[in-house]
Amino acid sequence: MLVTLMAKTTEEDMNQLEKDIRQLKIEYEQYFGGGKKRPPADLEWRIALTMKRYSDRGSQMNFAQRFRYSNLAQMYTKYREIFRKRMKKKEEGTVERHFGAAAREIENLRKQKHAAEPAPEPLQPWTITISCNDPDHEKKKVEELYGAFRHAKEQAGEDTAKLTREAFQQFVRQKTGDLKKQQSAHEVEFVVTVEGKHARLKARVKS
Image 1 (cartoon, rainbow, N blue to C red):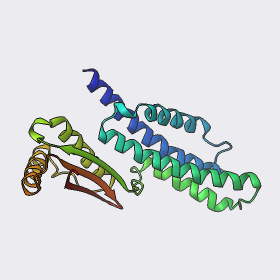
Image 2: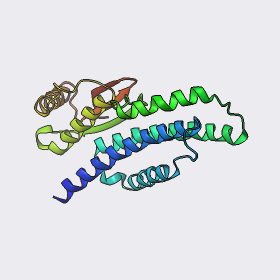
Image 3: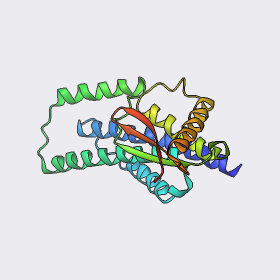
């Protein structure tokens, strides 16, 4: 029960963290465009606090949660670097003011806020590896692998409608058996990778 509650809380926190990071980008654009007097310091502080909490809690998260956290951390780090450079230019007085363009940009941002969620940011290459010896007796590992692969496909914008647990379990069972027979291996590694806009699942004999 405690594990289920923790997983639910983690998922809720990750959802809120993703929303906060995207909102931070919007509010910084409004600030740099002249629509806000101050940068969104409170929101940035809240994001940093959540990032720190889950950075210290990495061992308590499953593979899918760590995978999602890492992608959000990459997104936040990228935005922070962009904001830092633009803030430096603003403080040095090198930002050119185009109030007409800024007003149009702010209006567009307001419309976007009430429209559908923005498309996910392109993912950086990432790898998750899980070893299996007997998938039918390692259901927790298979479940974590399934969750990681499904999340990778969702983040890459791929369709997951046909990705069922039963079909995935059968695939892992068959692939493990085939590789163990072919190469006399004791364990098989399954690797989830995100390469550009595509999620990949590869199987290889553990060395």
